[in-house]
Each structure stands twice: as structure tokens, then as C-alpha cells.
Length: 321
Image (cartoon, rainbow, N blue to C red; front, top):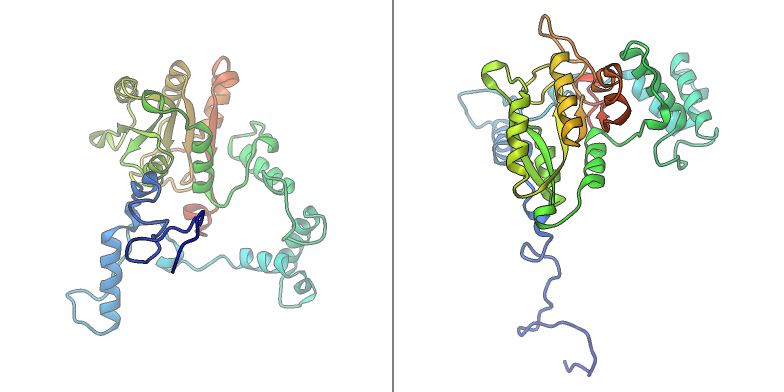
């Protein structure tokens, strides 16, 4: 085959077209991403499950997945009411069916009315359906003992992970020594290290104190921040409370100390509070960062930036995905 002058086709010496996307040419930031909850151990577990199904003899009869909080994969029965409301919203003709209870129909009709009375498939505003944001605001007010929550400050997303990545994208900027640094706890939920690697941000590790039930120590935050400022520009502090995977619950005094630290060091606070309904240890109590920050008053309540995250997934309703 002859090539005309000006022909932009790229043909290798062996006559085969070179691939545009390979492991060598892909985004190097994506290549660095690791998500440990789906790594080699999980792959081996899947192999063992397959072998057990095929009748291969093992010194055990089942594989228990402890790598991720997947409630329904572990046998939790889905919540029927949620499925009924979703079905009615997606297919409103079912509102005439006697097979659905009245409370599910009322909830579906309310949601559909908020969507213009037409379809759940219609576009909403970018921050989510107004009615649902108002419901979320009422939930937060009730959780925080009556402290007002503004629905205009609430953003709905497809899971807390998506919202966390979105906020990180807003924060990350700079190159070289000005690259954005983000303080994250170790041990951590691997979403954070994976997202920071993909965004080409700098992961700044601060270590929880295992000897003190994985407590967060502000002195450790100061150490991590001081070291990080030699090679990047730290802009955000991520806190997971209750801890994942450590399970610790921060005392109110600790939360106040963290807020003062972030305020003094001009750090954006990210509070991952997905497991707030899973506090079982006697004497432990969940305090939201929003509530504590508000009650601390000025200058903190007026000036400290905070994004907090919750989800209907995992321990709240067990509806992952």
C-alpha cells in the first residue's frame, strides 16, 4: 500500500498500526492508582470460591469477605420499602397496582411531584432534587439537635465516594513544590490514596495511635504538616470519623482540637462521617463536625471551611452501589 503525500496515517515498520492507548502511553497518574480492597487477596479469594463450587476439597467450607463493607453480599436482605418506592418512581403506572402498599405510593408520588410530576428520568439541578435536599437538611437538623441546615449547602451525589473525589478535584492545583498536599489518616480507606494518585496530588500521611485505640493526635498532624511543607502545598485535612477501617469514634474535645488546628493552618476540612450510625462501644458518642464547628462559634464557625459526607450505603441502610 502506497501512502500519499500528506497522509496522516501512522503505520509501524511491520505494517501494523500502533495503538494509541497502552500501559506505556496511558495517563501515568492513573497507572499509579491502587485500590487495595480489590487487590491480589481478593482475586485469590474469588479463585478459592470457584474451586469450592467445583468440589475441590479445602480445609474450610466457605470464604468470608472481610475486605469491603458489602452488606448485601454478606447476606443482608435488601430493604423492601426502598425497592418499592424506586419501582413506582421509575414506572409510575404501578401506582395503580394493588401489589404496592399505600405508604410506598405516597412517597413515590411526592418524589415524582418534585420532579415536575412527570418522570424520574428528567434532569434535576446539578446539586440534586430540591425536595430531597430539603429532606436531607431536616435529617441533619434532627441529628444535630436543632442546629439549622441549609438545603442550598447540600449536594447529592452517587455515593459519598463520588462527592469526596469531586471536592478533591476542586482543591487540587499546582506543580512541583506547589502541588496540593492532602493530609489523610493511616490506616485509611483506600479511596483517598487512589484519588490523590489519579489527581497527581501529594498524599500526606498522618498516623493514628494504635496504642490509644487508634486515636487522632494533633501533635501528629503538626508533624505531618511540617514535613509536607518542604515539598508541597498542603491545602486540606481529611478526617474519617467513625474511623474506617479502624472503627474509633472521636471525642468532642478531639474534634474541637482538629478544627482549631485546621483553622490555624488554613486547611480545608473534609469530614468522612459515613459510619455515624454504627457506634457500638459503651461510652462512645458520635459528634458531627458541622455541629461542633457551629457550637464553637466565631471565629471558627464563620470562617473554617468544611465539607462533610454521609451515604445511604454501608451501615446506614446497607445499600451499596
